Image (cartoon, rainbow, N blue to C red; front, side, top):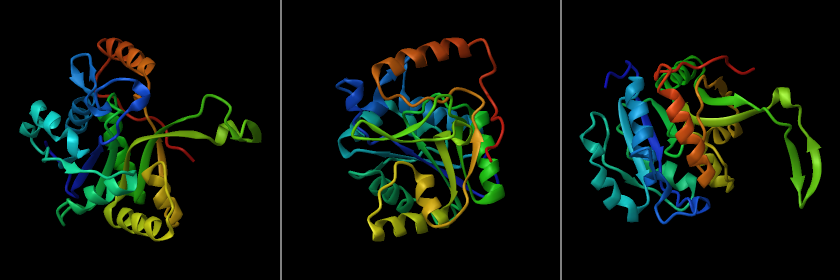
Length: 244
């Protein structure tokens, strides 16, 4: 692994149970074409050559499964950190484990196992320019806000993007944001949302390659098809345009 001068560490979040998959295996350890989701995510981060340290954040009961994979033999991959009940708890545990020299944190969901190394490089580069950046893609469908089955609002699709990971953030910004969220008892569904609350601008970079999150069984079927298609195109990938 050949990290860039300002060290970037990746926290790979894999503590989720994945009930919607309907399998007996924790989601991060579900196999996809012969490799687990977490292994595919880690190998993509390594291939980007932007990440100097990779820390898996897992449930305590999954540590044995992790050891069986033997991924700590990969240069830059550390032993796992035990996550918490909520994403915020897992993030705090992951951040606390990082050495002081780490200035940037890339948060990645293990379930986004098809992320392209080129897209990782692009989002890291964007974050270095402005302090925080995430991968994403423009919304293709009309988005509505709904309460109890009633439509409250329809958003301008041209202004809507779907957030993905990695989300790359200055370490001090992320630590500040998580602390503020904890004091105010505010929960977020992604890490950039915490940073937004503290007033920092976050850039979004369009992923050049498909980067779906594996949530349901049908997602595995789609991911298999995407992997088959990827055999005929360059593996590296590179991100596209930057959002407004």
